[in-house]
Length: 232
Image (tube, rainbow, N blue to C red; front, top):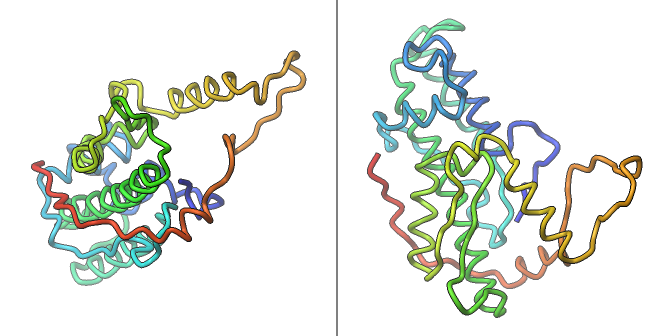
């Protein structure tokens, strides 16, 4: 799976949380002044009401596994602007509902990731692409540092008979583990191996195997509903 908005900086989960945190001026919140955007959203969400705002899960009617966070970003931005007008809040000031916005946006993001991942697992199962013994979903990179997202994905793996494996949070502050894993897989297949450092080029993507995006889309797998209820 991939993001369909790769050209935009705030379409990935960590960048999206950062954008929302900046829009909410969370740097001025006493509990968040020293935290990153993602950490601030996760912290405040623990005390927020995710039902206070209704954000639609992106691309809910499209039966593929691609991610898209641009639509969610726009929904949250519009909600913040509306509340600012209602409360008469000026730039740099904090809304009274920052915790609720954090909780609602985090839940919608986690739900989107979970549903896309659920469909990917079901597709792989239908095609016999998973190993028979102890099939495992590995989640790394910045998104895996969010405990709420981890718990949401655990619901999916429990329902599909997979084991969820995430590196310790301290190793998920960037995409180092994910990039290293990709390197190992490419090394196994003898792809992208260069003998001289001057041959190295920086690429935004490092695909493996065949692109089966269209095959997944054509399968149009409808996922069964799961109760994604997490105790904060």
